[in-house]
Image (cartoon, rainbow, N blue to C red; front, top):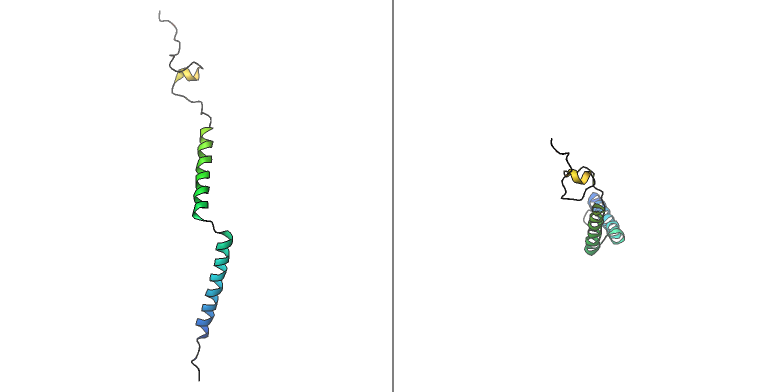
Length: 82
């Protein structure tokens, strides 16, 4: 008489094999190589730098000459003291 088979263990082993096969198919279908991930990260960082480089100034400046439209380094004109 053959050895008894644990049906629960056989069912779990079959399910694991099916899940592993599905995971392998998904990895081949959707997986990306390390080079692709590094390239994507570099492109994301470059686009963020480019966007930051094109940002407008907020307009609030510590230099009053800049807010008056004068070139940098020129003091604002003050009326003469009597």
